[in-house]
Length: 391
Ligand SMILES: *Cc1c(COP(=O)(O)O)cnc(C)c1O
Image (cartoon, rainbow, N blue to C red; front, side, top):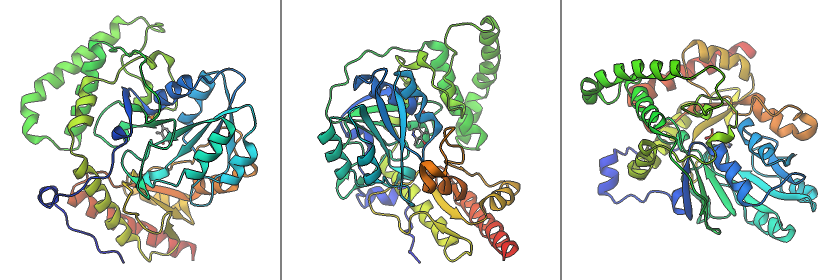
């Protein structure tokens, strides 16, 4: 059983803890409103055109597909291995002259080795887009996330407590296209929605009093703004639907900068704290799940270069377990449970199996000790009971 270092953020700094490399250090950076908008921009910058093909992992987020279609290109799915890493032989078999780009994802924050994929792309003249939506921090054998691809994208919303945010990064190319503000309505929405979420989780107690009036005002203002907008208006919505757990791609957000609130949060939040606490929470979950029947972690260990997005667990009776976990109020992510239409076991049996069996649990830096203890107890109860039922 791994021993879990007890790290308070303060002691971490006193001991001079080294944060993992951040995606934002990997090269030129542009802050946009979501990871999928950054994918669209990366493909556009690569010159992807109608008639081109883009290789995408058969295990994916459905939000990765519409940006490819926005460029007029078609998607070809390639296989992944049982642990979600790329099947390089399948990619090699599918790289023909019409494939102009390959997307590779560091799933769940575990950076994978992309050296052979880099060489393969170079040999075929295809661009490499490194999808770091789950891996804002980390390295593989000393190579920082985001530095192998021609372009890399991140989903800042998955790591920072912000309402909207994604980034496009390049280690190899300039990123000189213009971006503009989405306007004061959007700026206000982004700031207030982030604060509202913090309140809902009982954080920022000291600020609550000072901000309760502005938050009530926000409600009134928001309704007024909405009522002034004609129904079915062609003008962009005040906030992107990428912030509302949809998989849509709205091209009206392609030229919009992320809000000032999000950009400041991403710039000034402590990276060392995020990395240390996520790793610690991950290891505590690992410790509680160790030895429970009917389930196993997707990754047997937490490598030193990884900062996890969530804790991915493979569960034999995943639907039954998810139902009892949901009844117990446990937050979960069923990543890959919905794949793009047409992706089935013939496309990639490993992807379908991952989508069916995987349940992800939160290891977010803002989880408090009591919340984590409740989560651990609920997991042991629900997973123990499910395994007993199945036996
Ligand atoms: C979430 C996600 C994206 C897109 O990020 P958004 O910020 O939600 O647009 C891309 N790739 C993967 C693997 C994701 O999970």
